[in-house]
View 1 (tube, helix red, strand yellow):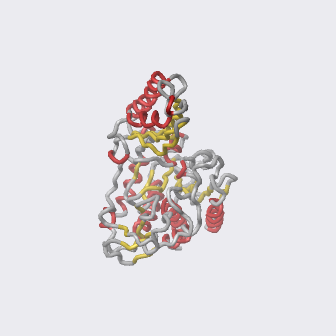
View 2: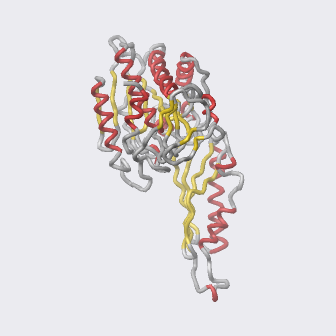
View 3: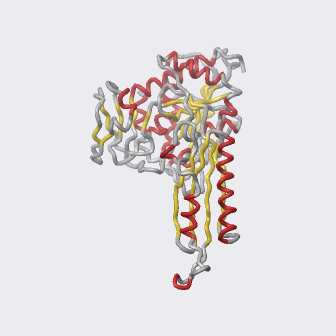
Length: 409
């Protein structure tokens, strides 16, 4: 099956994860695609194929005879789609010989505009797959899933010599839980790659340090006519907290390795209020400074309005995988060699986000991230080219061949 056929098949599954859920998977609907992938891996002849009770899919393509001593490589992608926008009843638009102009999204009447997405300038002449504007596409990360399975299929058909190749598909990456129950002991690769990026010639091994921060504010509510020196308006305290954070350290004003405070949600009234932030920075020291600033604000607000008025809860999410990958740079060199072998200039940019690979790296599985060829993720302007997916398949195959040149496991 062609890689684009697989993508179009997979996006037909509604797999949006649920950020409010406390279960794994966060939604039972993720099992439908997981069962399909389990069946496909078995059909391809993989061994140790399993679909766990928590919706993780694993499989092993055993080493060809004589290659059992080589390092084992893994490839990982996530099955869920982001809850930022609808992922149900996806209706892809397929545009052959894309002419490089703005694209009408026929379901919504909006346009995918070249001025908004610079990558479109590089996709002229290709076969472009977009949404119809009413949903996201789901190439994040079903393109990664399709590319991995297509590469495995071709490796089997072409009888390419290889060491052990593990594949893994996870739920709930989009809600930050994709690696929570990943079985590192079962998935016994020496290293792996997630396929969950954009430009197909990219290998990323730097990501944000990340945490969530929630200010819970307890106000004092009395009749406004008799409120002098008594009332503490929780909503106004929330505004005061927000105004104490650096105005230039927000997502809309940062790029590259610059970190930020992102106010995701703010709600409340006189009696109580809540501010929910995500905090990000590539630099560990600067990240720690950001968290210390939040703690200092909590202290200052309680000193001003009374102890217990403000309670700050910080929850760490993930760390920068660079601290792990820097001791395993041969993995990056291997990926860059594979990218060059397929006619592209490899790039490595700091990821302004996180991947399952970051957490897996800290769990003992060094795991940088490869591009899939898709762009505009998490919304109606998501798009990908068939040619980019085909190249990503070839890069996976090149990595598998190059693994044989490494020292034995």
